[in-house]
Length: 293
Image (cartoon, rainbow, N blue to C red; front, side):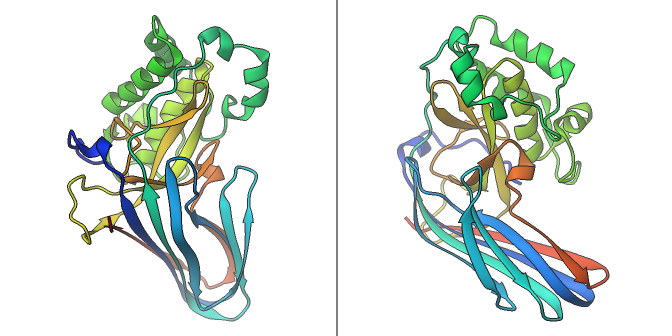
């Protein structure tokens, strides 16, 4: 999960073509006899990105089933019924991205309190296990929104989270909540996103969690490959959905590749599953991003 330095002044004017290679390897102390998995590793096409090619492969080979889940993510489901001591999932995609996302300023606070908005977006206003109600964060959010229109409140809250938390890999885990990260005042991109979601929802702004990737070098040369990780940011609804990256306090732009959206990390975990046998297991994850154009 990635934090980067400030982008260059001309970055927002460019679109990119990015290849993402995401490899996940499982190794078992004893042979696993069965394995059932689902992967959310396939980017989606929309108005700000176009997927040119994508595939998900496994070693040993499996028969895969692809479907779109409730939140709109492409899910690749597969199972393995032969004894194995190692299992690898390799996802490769090439994506064209676009310039930085601009805030959408089409609603007022009165609009956001209306029954139509609350009914349509209630799932992105409701607390979850990862984004529970937090009185302290809600109080700060209400203070930050004073005198601002909804879109500007999104930016103020996102920037505040960026300033308050320290990016520290290993300080939290995949099961840490927004409250855990806030108490520790540190975390990774998952935590920055969760804390921001708690605050936005507490003032009535529908907000969702976005999973994807971030190329970490704004001035990368064509063909240069960088080591990366999965990344996370937020989408806010202020008359339409638009994205912002609180970990880095930057707009979502050409270096961001989005994969899935949901209420929190639980809805968009890149890979999850169960296995029988195998004993103790180890996990190896590697992400490489290459700017192609």
